[in-house]
Length: 74
Image (cartoon, rainbow, N blue to C red; front, top):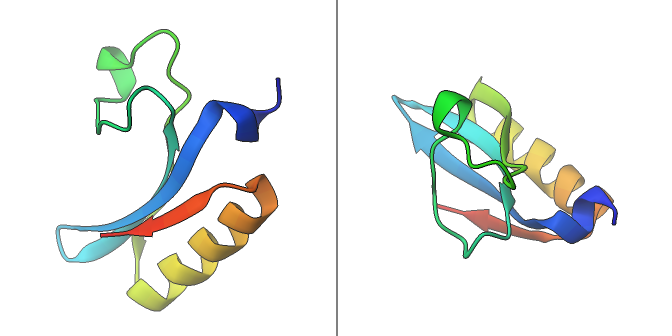
């Protein structure tokens, strides 16, 4: 199984005044914790943070095309 088959989408959201690009897994499309609280079957990850909206959209768009998953902008 390729990475894109395990992913649900790429999300872009604002956090503390800057933008974050995140790969989100297909575990029911819930925003669950990363790090120590990460679920064993989860492959979510923060790709980039501290971005302008324009930079986040560029990275997110390119990544969603490359991995062939949806892009969700919050």
